[in-house]
Amino acid sequence: MRLTLILAALVIAVSPGSAAPAAERPNIVFILIDDMGYGDIGPFGSTKNRTPNLDRMAREGMRLTNFYAAPVCSVSRAQVMTGCYGARVSIPGVLGPRSRTGINPAEHTVAELLKDQGYATMCIGKWHPGHQPPFFPTRHGFDHYLGLSYSNDMGRKLPDGRNVVPLVRDEKVIELLEGPGQDGLVARYTNEAVNFIRENKHHAFFLYLPHTAVHVPLHPRDAFRGKSHNGRYGDWVEEVDWGVGRVLDTLRELSLSENTLVIFSSDNGPWLTKGADGGEAGLLRGGKGSTFEGGVREPTIAWWPGKIAPGSACDAVAGNIDLLPTFVAVAGGALPTDRKIDGSDISGLLLGKTTESPREAHYYFKGYKLEAVRSGKWKLALVGQQQAGSGKKRAALPRPRLCDLDVDIAEQTDVSAQHPDVVKRLLALAEPMKEEIGDGSPGRGVRKPGVVDEPTLLFAGAAGKPKPRAAAPAAQSKPLALEALGPGDVVPAAAAPQVANCPFTISCEVTPAQPDSTGGVIVAHGGISTGYALYLKDGRVVFAVRTGRKLSAVRSEDPLNGTATIEAHLAADGSMTLSLNGKPPARGKAPGLLAKQPAEDFCVGFDNRRPVGDYDGAPVFHGTIRNLKLTTGD
Ligand SMILES: [Ca+2]
Image (cartoon, rainbow, N blue to C red; front, top):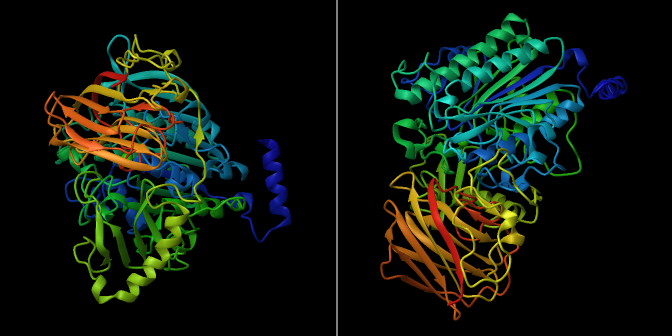
């Protein structure tokens, strides 16, 4: 650290025009809320939730009204860390507790780049762009970490039956939180943040504070429970507002306000399918999981008294991919030149030097699929978007759909026929990005994720669960020991069921957490060239087989309605059947058996790498999966 500081000082000494002197390097605080909607706080129009501290933050700072995240958690967090679209760094969807992937150690995270500038760095809260040990915050540039490694609804069972999530300090699990154990998280993170600020009051610091709130399950603590006018969701929003107030008050008290840039935002839109437990997108269409504005446009406030104009608003297009370049610029650093960074420095917007976005376009990816592109006020949808990330309406559009967001923020009116020139210009912007990052599968500019061979749960999980390596790799005529596996479990590729040139039957019993669940992977084994998967799509069960890149799928007649036994079979001649609850099966046809063994892991309840089927990114199945069996033979 000392050497780094000396080197940084030397660089500053020889290039005074390009770097901020150490004394002027601002502290940087980024507060990220989970699943908070565009319409959930006072400065963005909420009349239900009382947010006096955020109201004050906005009065003293700038509202960024066109600030974009990604449709889901892990992707957004990867964007914050790398300054790139999540799909570019191979984090296209949500990662489960046993996911093998994470941000590649070769990427330069914002924490690493700020550390190079001599910053003290800490991450407090929900991490989630990969949580196997090589992907811990402490391996990606943070001096210290405290928080839940992933979402608070990704509990795993202990041998005694308790369902817990791990609270990690630095690299050790220090507590397993069950249910009400999560109640104190906002206060705990906030106290930790305040301590970190106090400890570093004489030293430039970067504090990344991604709250576990307000993601379902909702856990406001006693002092806030039942106090808002908007149920427990409002209670938790109001507790978050309290936490923001404490952080800002601490900066004021230590006379650090004028030397600290604080940004507040959310990682994706409100979880609309949770009803009253989810937030609101205000005037925007859609929610979490969607590339409509409601899924990705976030209530964002920037605060830096003396530097950012009080009570101002910025309507230019910006987003969390721009944070890395912006933070590095205000810290006096330089961007890496060995790789493409998608974001741009928006400090000119924050400091009132310009009102023009530095980016010609913003791209809306869902998984590896480019679904829409925006330039200025125009947004062009290339495919039918989903309102809430799942369900109907994700088909090819008869023609791209153009909206003028200046007058149609709710994306109701297609004006493509009136503006063919605009459509042409946006299509021209979209095409190279489809090739580069993806039009359904990874493009040529996608970089590899970090991958571990043997994922761990971070703590000892349910008793009786077979260790992945214990599963028999040999060809079998009896079922593989998969019965004890549940959502989030992974059998590494080498130990996964051997299905090359074998007819096989896969069966299980599933119970979705919500009776109206519409999406989620039940089993995935394979990738873009070979494999098979069982998943929910538009509320129906799909059995898909990929052979030589061709995807063949059969879909259940009936929607999945509560608990169901599922049996899917691929026969020697490629015939496919899919039966629910022993009813006469739906039938389909693949070109034949899988010609080769999938190189990917066998995943339960999610897909840890590239999708086998036509689900988006890597959707997680919420519910239980029991009695999983895979039998080979006709
Ligand atoms: Ca989220």
